[in-house]
Amino acid sequence: MIPSGPIANGADIAGDHPCFGCPVRHRALCSALRHEELARFRRTGIGRRLAESDALCREGTPAAHVYTVKKGALRLSKLLRDGRRQVIGFAFPGDFVGVTMEGEHPFTIEATCDAEVCQFLRIRFVAFLADHPHLDRRLFGVAARDLAVAREQILVLGRKTAIERLATFLLDMTRHSTQIPGEPARAVLPMPRSDIADYLGVRNETISRELGVLKSKRLIRMIGTHKLAIIDRAAMERLAAGDDALTTWPDPYPCWPDPTRSPPASLQVVKADAAPEN
Amino acid sequence: MIPSGPIANGADIAGDHPCFGCPVRHRALCSALRHEELARFRRTGIGRRLAESDALCREGTPAAHVYTVKKGALRLSKLLRDGRRQVIGFAFPGDFVGVTMEGEHPFTIEATCDAEVCQFLRIRFVAFLADHPHLDRRLFGVAARDLAVAREQILVLGRKTAIERLATFLLDMTRHSTQIPGEPARAVLPMPRSDIADYLGVRNETISRELGVLKSKRLIRMIGTHKLAIIDRAAMERLAAGDDALTTWPDPYPCWPDPTRSPPASLQVVKADAAPEN
DNA sequence: CGTACCATTGAACCGTTTCAACCGGGGTGG
DNA sequence: CCACCCCGGTTGAAACGGTTCAATGGTACG
Image 1 (cartoon, each protein chain N blue to C red):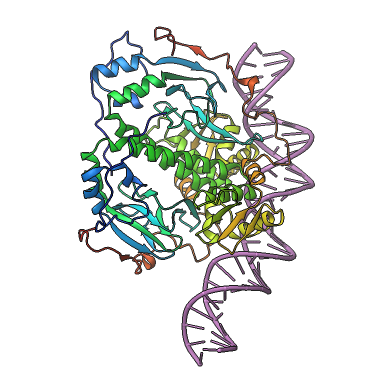
Image 2: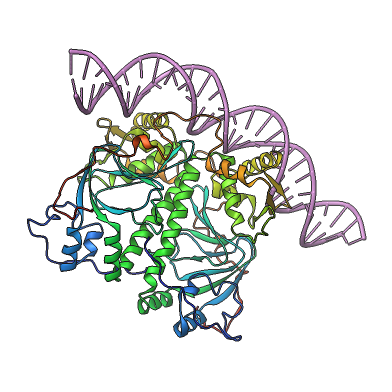
């Protein structure tokens, strides 16, 4: 509804430029930058290679950098003081992480597997933003998308059963693997079971068990521990959407759309001196 | 970290202006607008009065307006297809709701009690944004704050017990009631128990029961059904933070901050031709 | 003052957790 | 080269927190 800024289409990068060959140079925030300034800013990023569980930053520490994911995957997580962990989300190639309004990181960022990121100094990034105010719109777009994802996850954690959460997650993961048209969708899970469990708000034993249920119901087929095929996508989508619940729900929660409640009659205009079309 | 735009301090509104006397004219997005344009835009908003359960918009319908809350409270909620409901969040006086990148509302917005909002036509709002690009930064700030709140709620729903969720919520609610220094903090709950339950991902019976537990432990004292006093704030905060869990947690989740894991030795610079301070 | 609806309380049930044992693959050292 | 071990993943059985269903209580509103 609120239009995003224009997508950059500047000249590409020469072979000796640090961004040359970067798998996400046309995605992430990089694609919002243009022409010469683009090249100048992107050159300030340095690559870092991470192994599983290597941390980019920790919850509560001063935020000194922002990052673009080039390969692998990251997990963003928060801890309760007694050690319970919640994975807030994962970041995949092309994602941009680490931007915050506060001075310190709101969560820990670690690799879930071998990964590569491009790291930018935050003060340089902030200065660059000041020189390029048109990026604010773009930044808002990134935050708005993240917000929609986070709110969807609130629905998942608040109201879905374990198997529904898992189905939702597996379908999501197909979007991060290249698909062959006509073939069953593939999902790669580039993280240990414990990360999936902490993302979905259950224990890893539950992940194992519900994966077993999906297998025995022939909705999925495992291809090793970290890869699988979605055999019956329609059934998975019904499951993820909460359609297959065996129980009918009590009255006070009408299914949407519910024409019987559509026009709230008691809505009334208090001040009528404004334009009528409002 | 990313600085917000300047706060408006323009001349106030004359007595015949529709915004005169609005309790939030110095807050919400209104405070980001300035001087004459400010007055012109704010005049385009019309007031609406809502009774409990009156809807401003419904999940999935085209987004035609944006709103500022003046009085009362709103709930933002999503439904699963079988009717399970999740309250994504509440909006209180001064909050700005309804902005979305998509063309349709991602959730239903209803009043939880008698409420008043100021309603703006979206196309007019978008046009105003186009004329005032400095507002993009402000808009990003709003989205970033909402994002932090949503992610905190993910932690609550994914990892906290029912009583911890309730303690977290009650402490939050004290920030929306005026406090008397030296007195025990007061919290007003301007919504039915079912809204609190659907916000915290439990049934309303559970809310009743856990409220009973907090009462019997002398952490809170009810003052009618919709008001209460926090008697032992320190204990409530420990409870909300997950400090009081009776069980010690297994090893793999170190408490933060954990110096033993701080410097990930395997972090290595891949390209070293960038500035050294990066 | 009655009544309807929200809130509370009780008891049985169930999904997920907890605790424990087992499996299997990859890396290491003998 | 093979045995061993370590650790992530899987499976089983018992315990528990929250749900479900049902009945009662309270209160706000007509």
